[in-house]
Length: 474
Image 1 (spheres, rainbow, N blue to C red):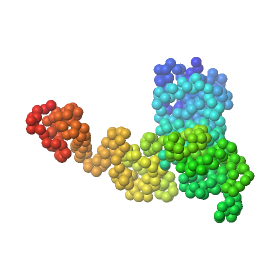
Image 2 (cartoon, one colour):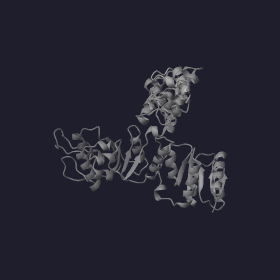
Image 3 (cartoon, rainbow, N blue to C red):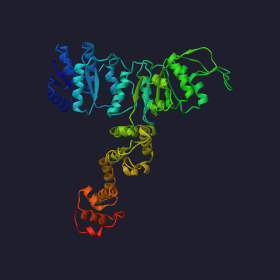
């Protein structure tokens, strides 16, 4: 088997991948630049089985390498590595026909598994279609977002109906825009309509248009959104809240490809690609009889699920810095900077409003924070005092430590230690209905130690000590 070629100007990356492949008995050869590798290929050197290349290097870039390799060796899988984990990098990688792209920092086992797959799998046609590299503001390093980026790249040449799901504020309309902009329909219109925001008596006319005299006030014929989006994309937001009678009309359009204006008799061909989105659980609404099952299957050709912000906490610093930069540009002021403590605190919060809430927060900080450096104390009170999420108590502890180190220098250790002991003892007493001997056993300490701690910490809810067992350490 020909060796794997690893191309990266970072020596550490080359070394890590070489050693990992060596452990898997996969031969590898490293290059510090794409130029060096291309010179060998053009000199007639036998090509490798797989190329793993960085995207940004001195000299020729990974994308230039990819283009040259595709010209001469169209079946050679190329995996692109990038530290720039945004949608553009993903789309540009697929634009050049990359087998896959690997965002840095990466898990070594995942990288090896990806290389093994490149050795054994043939590429699908949709992975190698030409794409247009259009910048969007969709950012994310979390694995769930990387999957979304990959899906957008693979869907670029498709006109299939897409259903985008996710909580409010996760960026569903941004994804719809990206699907449109990276499609052959990019030159035509992108038309969006929130089906939950329009009264049901007007929704039919909004979608399909109406003829003159179709109803009171219809003094002239009017095109609907389907006609406006002809040749382009129609984005139906909050489809899960669409009234039942409109679900029937929409199903007929998706099934037959034709629709009628309100009051009209001539069929009109539906030429728009439909992308629908909802924060609702459509599977549950179908089971409850609130959403037509046949319409659900028509919409659910390809489903993209956007993760909530709490599911991608590692992206909070990246997103926050981006939104602070955008807010500063919009307001023509200097960009604010979040301290490490503030970022750690933000990572403990639930963010029910998701990315939109974080964006609004960054705008608020740009206007309201007194200095250029934003600390925990500069956050809005409702976020500064918000309870941390329960998923990782160490993260919550770190946030509490940051606050105390800033507010009570010299006392943080004693304060946190007392609260830690108090919480443990109170929970143990609650679990044993106040029985100290059982609580001490659960905690793994002596009963006398527990009694002393209760007194020292001033725990008021603890029951009095049983005099018959006083002085006996159990």
